Image (spheres, rainbow, N blue to C red):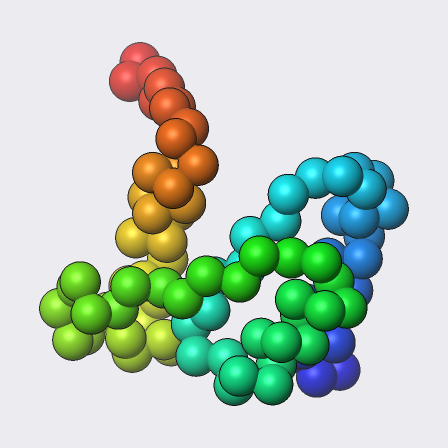
Length: 87
């Protein structure tokens, strides 16, 4: 299965459970046609990940150094606070 098909099927599943839920997809290197396809077919908001704000090693996608940053950016963008118990 192609990665794009897996992504759209996950979005379709979320849409079935929560039809009005806002879904944000962070673009880690999508082609412009793929981004437009997602916006049009899946009704999601596509945002470019701000690689330019981080050291160059973050854009090595297979090293996953972007992942915790993406979570932090998502929490910041959505103004979500969270609490992590320390004990």
